[in-house]
Length: 398
Image (tube, rainbow, N blue to C red; front, top):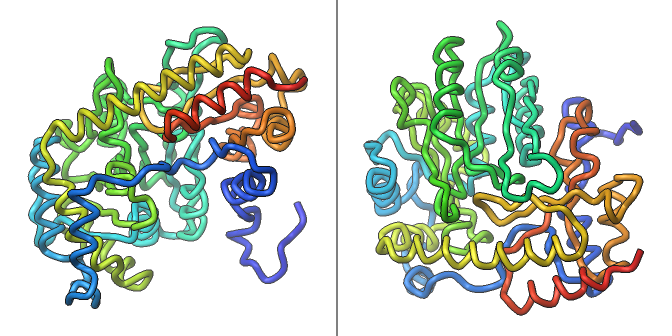
């Protein structure tokens, strides 16, 4: 690996994200961008109108360090309503600059140099960088896709491999469910196995649940913090970006026992300090929307998932239909005989006028072979965009 000048050793290997590369490729070639996971429609008016009304008011100024009370109270009420977990908005809820800052601040606050973090891969790309910035060490455990052709199958893991990843240096288990990039929703039995391991090894748990409301029929999201003995050792990360189609607002949060949240707040205050003043009351309004909004959101996205999944299968790309999130995974080997997903993605704009993301970037380099042949497509787009993308993929050149 060529060393990047001036960059610290702990961040060597973390270059420009693949999302930036593929999004630039989409612009340069006029391709449909199914790479990066952001919606192409506005969020609900009930949320947007509150933000517009807040601009030009005192909400433009610095919010309180932990976040505006109206949002912290709305977060606590929302978690109680949907997860049955009670958190004190005064000292068990912290507003952050998106979920990424929540996760990074937590890792910076909780890890000592050399502490190990157990997590599942493929993993969202910021996790490895945040662990590195905190001086931690990754201990990835692979998720395995269902057999080729089993589009309705589930990603699974080997409990023995999970147990083997926990060494005496392990400090924290980083969980992501619903899971990006696979679309897996961890079952109650799987979460119970993770919880038993965390309690037995006295691990803290940091759980990323930003896709909690984007779960499709037949699956159900369960927070590991609701399992016996887990609330007191778990930090739960959430965000308004995916739920309200406001990914650019970067309003996230972390909930947990006061001592853990206090530790995270100590690190967070020296990152962004505060952010998004006018957006905080808007997200608060969104969190109070009726149940019909959240069920309708999932149903609409599930319909778009089905549209893309059918198109990918018709184009000769074996696909794993996701249980949640914005993303579907394909095996490119039927149309890319060498199984090089990165090469496939770089050639796809010329072959089909579509952009996707290679899954290999979501794996630890030592495990790259597990994801080399996999590619992720996003379906959080308008029907007409997905329909055109499917038609283009159907005409894909060799």
